[in-house]
Length: 212
Image (spheres, rainbow, N blue to C red):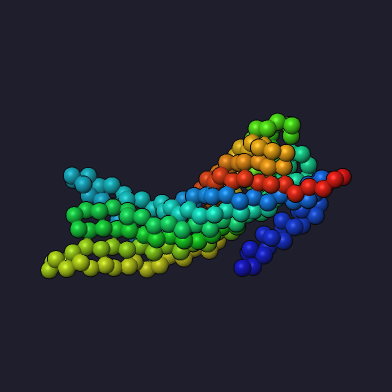
């Protein structure tokens, strides 16, 4: 919680120095997918036809994304966001043996962004960087029929993650109306310990303005 409060404080500190005379603030809502590599996961190798294959440590969840942003000038804006994610899948199945997982969590990114091309252009490209607070919970399960052909299920120890990541944020936005834009952004983050996540998202953003 302290890390989230710190990110919010950074956003409002930067926003207080913005020099834009017409935009009050912009709000966005969208949908995103989160892919996270969890090295601590119990992911064994698969043996097929005498070949061994690693089953992988990438887990996926999806959810809503919201955010607020503030322009500093026509090309630079700061943004604070929040997205949650929840997912689960069958990792693999061999005869009666199955491996599955559930994943849920949220992330709070803050970034400074630069928009390429003039503000009169409807299509503009975005590149940003910043920090992200990331939190997730992973549960893994295995099920199989025992020697008596009775179904059994085991749950592996829960893996909880709570950490701050470095973030880059490439994307593109298209102006639909005067104050309304649609965007596609991919947030890519890396923790100091080397944990990788990516978060592609589509969203719409509406700017609240005043005469000035």
